[in-house]
Image 1: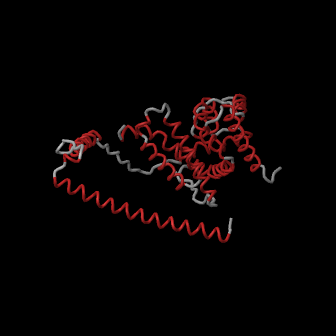
Image 2 (image 1 turned 180 degrees about the vertical axis):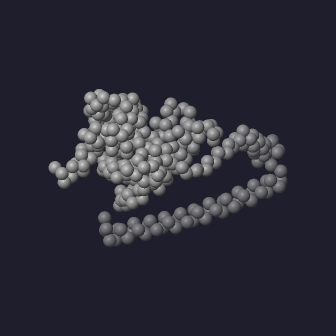
Image 3 (image 1 turned 60 degrees about the vertical axis):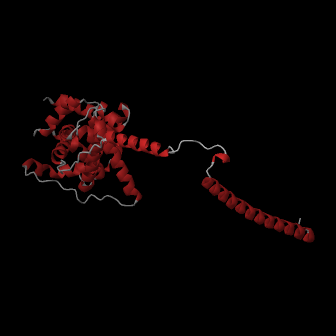
Length: 169
Length: 150
């Protein structure tokens, strides 16, 4: 497998890897490091890549595990990841300006979810993987994935309603 | 899209029972501008999902160095050459074997005697040392006898 073959395999999901890393690690820099690390890992084992039936699922699983490891080591050294460098990139669209506030709200709510639900909602609602793939990536049973996803969705909605009605009811 | 159908889908969505296609229908509906007021929260959620997908991309360039393949074929050739050479050097030149002292030349005989003499001297010295240690034991025995430590 040469460079261009490798790129053909990797490019379609590099953003997904990055977004999942960012969802879990919060900071953009950390997520970039994680993505870079993952791509290097894939590059190193590029000869074996063709043996995997689904490289993308494999990469997402690796990303998830890598991020969990990072988080664990952060907690061990008593460093908390503060979400200070989260920026919405300006794309200049009116619609986005209008929605920025709600976007931030939802972002914060997802951040409060347990890790597992975070991963699943990222994979399903943002990346739109189907259930079979998600099961493989997170190594869970389909019912467990559905339960976690349903819980995550309901929690977000409930919180949004609570915030929306704050001071009204 | 009729509202009743959307409401049904939303309920399924909450229970995580929707398929990717049904979620696409929901996404299209909620990203449009006319959303029923009681479903506003979903609009917020779907807007977030969409924007975070569109905005967060990984655009760093990484350098991948192709792994250089070593040619191990030549390494094995070199190894076998070295092996052959060492085997060749290991075989003594005069391959006639010597079995008894009488076959030695006078010069070899002289060296043999010298070595034998040296070894005898060494063993003699060792024996002397051993005897001295024996004396130590005798000393210890008599000390024990006198003081009756045991």
